[in-house]
Image (cartoon, rainbow, N blue to C red; front, side, top):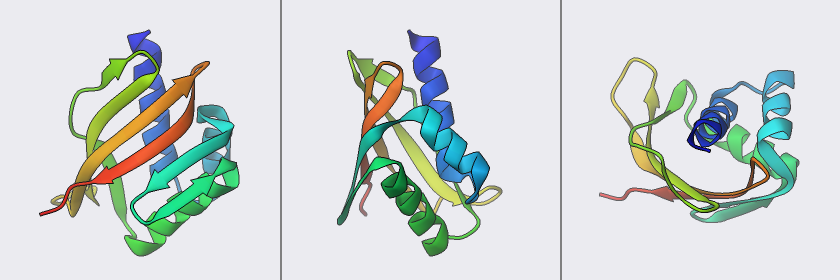
Length: 118
């Protein structure tokens, strides 16, 4: 199971780092359930269109940044969590936080984004 969870997390991060277009759309369709819930501080989205809007919003707000997993993946049944950093690919992190994922049948059904505060 750990290999498949590693793959889901890697594909999830790839979707968030992908530019708008067919590649991102394909990752979203593969990784997230059709009714996925995305809970962010101050915003909530649903479905593949909502996921695309959340990713686009982040990329528009912080162009040129990438999300990188910065800690181990932890799992308890259908709940998966790990820490991440956000920043330029070759520079210091501008933000950090934690994703909490709920999985069913190998796909993400819910994503909660927690951002570290100073």
